[in-house]
Structure formats: C-alpha cells, structure tokens
Image 1 (cartoon, rainbow, N blue to C red):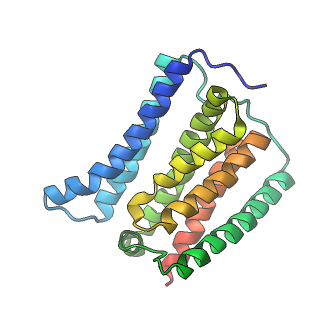
Image 2 (spheres, one colour):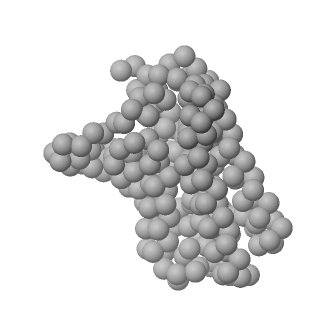
Length: 227
C-alpha cells in the first residue's frame, strides 16, 4: 500500500522545485558560457553534470527538512538475480523496438534524429572516456531517483492514478532532454521514461532502473564513439 503523504501542497512544491532547478540549469548553463566567451568542453560539461547532483542534493534536503518523510515513499522490493537479468533484457527489447519505431517515423517526416549538441558532446567523450562513464552514471542515479523514486509515486498519490503519474513523469523526463536539439531526443526519452515508470509501478525496485538507465546510456554513447 502507498504511504500517505503528509501534505499534498508541500509535495507539489517539492516537485515544482526540482523541475524548476533542472530546467533552469539546462536553460541557463549554455547561455552563461556564451556570455563569458567560454565554449562547451570537458570541464564545462562536467560542471553541468555536477549541477545535476547538486539539484538532487537540494531535493534530498527539501524532503528531509520540509516534507519530513522518506525520499523513496514506495517500499523497495527485492528479487532474485534471474529476475534482474530478465527485467533488463525485456526492458531493452521493448525500448529498442519503441525507439526504432519512433526514429523511423521521424525519418519519414524528414526530421533529424541527432542534433549538433549531441554530436558535440560525443566528440568531447572521444577524448574523455571517463567523463562518458560519469555522465551515464549521473543519468542512471540522479534521473531515476528524481523522476521515478521521487516524482512518480507522489504524482500517483496526488492524482490517485498510476497512469496519470506515469504519463506526466515520463513527459517531464523527456522534456529534460530538449537541449540535445531534436524531437527524437525528446520523444525517445519520453518512451524510455514510460517503460521505466511502468516497471517501477509494477515491481517497486529502483535499483534495477538505475542500473538499466546507466547501462542504456553507456551502450548508446559507446556506440556513438565508434561512428
């Protein structure tokens, strides 16, 4: 059974706060670099990832001091190793199928799948492999803790609907990737976010999603480095 939140108003403030922090960071970091004449390189990209960790820290502090409850409101369930392996494989099959279909549809419309921003980031990773690993790790831990562990369960309690919570949290998750420059970089993450959200709703295990998210990003980035 889902834990009852102490205050929907406080919870809404928390959700708005973390989304605002994430989107402000995305919207202001690159323009700030341009304003001071700096270019996006390894050090500046690392800073942007560290800012995401800072956002998570602020959210954790908010939950601890303002919400005064557990960060993860759904009780974590544990499973055997075969379950984790099968879960990762099945989620990857679903994600690959869905993302491929989205990519094909976008191509038929004559739209680009990869923007200049993503290409520039991949070029940075070619000279800084460790940064690629840290980026994938940051995505897996920070984004899953924020969008699945924090936002999704609270939205379900507020709207009293798992479907609404899955849809809204997935859309926000996808929109967070807008800075990569193409519609594919938004629709793809929305679909991936929905897959992860359904899995979290059904199985209540955030660890497998953190690992799956990290592995997915790591594999995609590794493939991109070889192109």
